[in-house]
Image 1 (cartoon, helix red, strand yellow):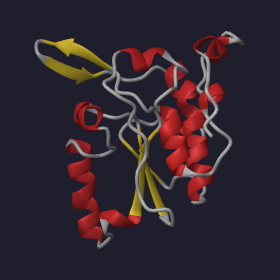
Image 2 (image 1 turned 90 degrees about the vertical axis):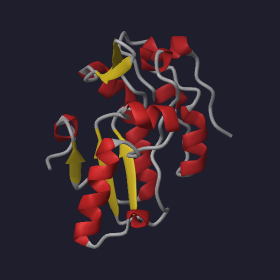
Image 3 (image 1 turned 180 degrees about the vertical axis):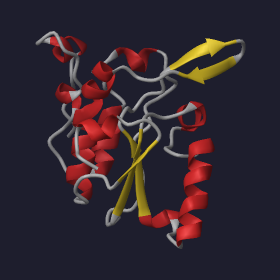
Image 4 (image 1 turned 45 degrees about the vertical axis):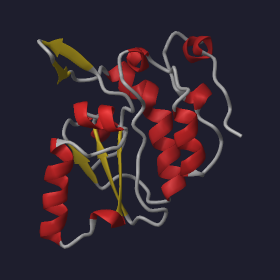
Length: 163
């Protein structure tokens, strides 16, 4: 059973963190379900939904993006928007089936700002990336694929692992 977090627990040390919401499990299904209750930072307030990683249990490759985009936020799945189309093209050219890779993001909620009727990507702050890090670490443990071998988009991952 997923551990329920309390929004107040996320700020006990003055820094926000998803850690109180992340269950001690290597089940992606359980982690994904628990992520919907996360209040480790304020991004959940304006996002449509959490966007957790997706892919096969035995994936040998994991791609980590910065954060979900507008389409990912609306559909609730990673890499289904323009970045996903670019990834699909690169995978096809490399001869790697998309169904063989695990895709996720360092931040699980879409950060955006309104511009007319559009929602425009806004770069997450380092504090938001750090707050979400427990989810990514849990995904890495569950996938058993070690540190990510490629980063997509912005460079936050190179602060955690030398790539």
